[in-house]
Amino acid sequence: MNNDLDAFGGAPAGDAEISFPDLDDVKIKTFYLPPGWYNAVCTDVEEKTSQASGNHMFVFEFEIGDSASGTIKKKQHCTLTPGGLPFLKKTLIALCLSELKNVKVSKMVGRRVEIKVVDDPYDGGIGSKIADMRKHPQGAVAIGGSTTPDDDICF
Image (cartoon, rainbow, N blue to C red; front, side):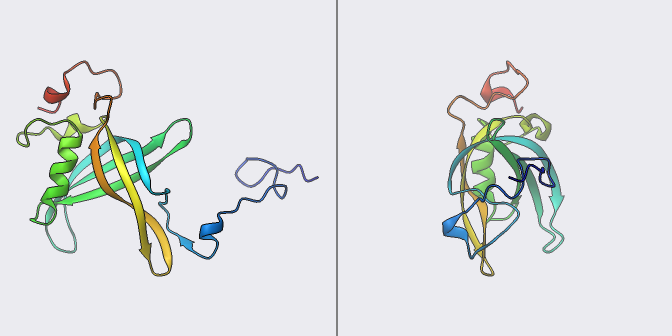
């Protein structure tokens, strides 16, 4: 029995094999979660300009998952274009905004949502992407104990 720890300080190396039978011959992108709905927290919001198109956009960073099973950070780019506005609106509503004007970006950080992740095939590999978002069933109250009502916290 080999009792040496693996390079990451985990369980003894060489004794266990992890297999994902459906993904054996598929390359995995950096971000992969099985398709489904996940709890998430908004950890950052930036206003930027796309280098490729010059379009203005908001870049939301979400921490998806929970502390017990682990989390993954994923950025969602929402451009201020006719094609990007529906997802931006859905994101803001999921963050429990009652009006989509005069939003204070800094107040969105720490708020909970539920995110739907789907497979994102690419060049013979597979990754995940955020396909949908909705309000968290227990409310979007900011992590850290904010007592401001959901509809007013971002204004």
